[in-house]
Image (cartoon, rainbow, N blue to C red; front, side):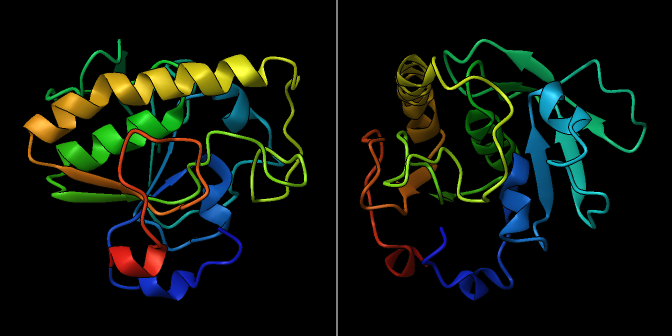
Length: 179
């Protein structure tokens, strides 16, 4: 994401997943599923102009819109729930689907560590152990594979704008070619 011209997002609907809001603070929605992320004041925004949405039921902030989390065998069509288990990205995809998106362009969905060993592009310290990363990436990939057929059946085109991604569920295109 660090090499992308994100100004190309101007005027487009954007859902930021967790700390990715740092790359595009003008996102319409900030979504997170992990309450630990929100409770860490170094990770979450102190101010965010868009709508904040979560499936973390333990978060008591009345300004946060809560959705139920369901098993990710398919995208949810219930406006009160999203499918996800191991990655907030799946929940973000589901929110976009619920909002009527016909095309979803994924940014920063690498499915692997960066060349520098980092897990995230925002540069913030990841507060949880790195030991489970290979399995976590495998679980995330399985989750994407589980929801892909339902997205296609709903007529939603999903593309991964990272040609170097380990996520091979959707076509990979350069960001500029997705717009």
